[in-house]
Length: 85
Image 1 (cartoon, one colour):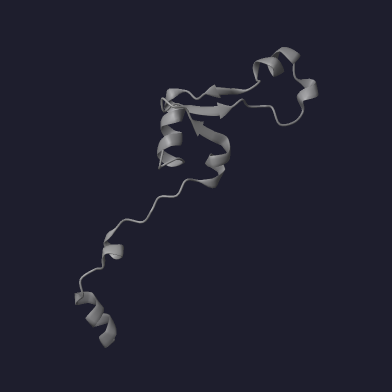
Image 2 (tube, one colour; image 1 turned 45 degrees about the horizontal axis):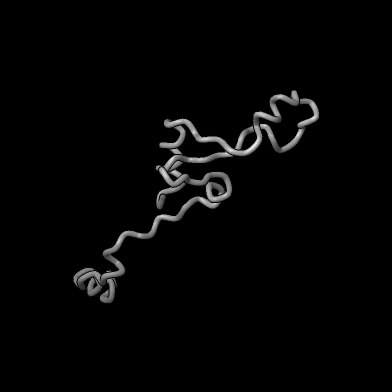
């Protein structure tokens, strides 16, 4: 083992080396999910990007705006995709 590596093994860690790395929010999640003031996850409705002419008009009306994600889905989204939320 080279001398400089041996020497490094016995030096105390700096403050930066002791801290855990910052968790980053997934960039795809930033575009798709938002949190409400009470902590629920707000998501967009599905099937609204293309091929709307073949969908029933009532379905398109009901799919306007956003909706609140179900509790199991919200738990997964918060834990895996929005760690800082």
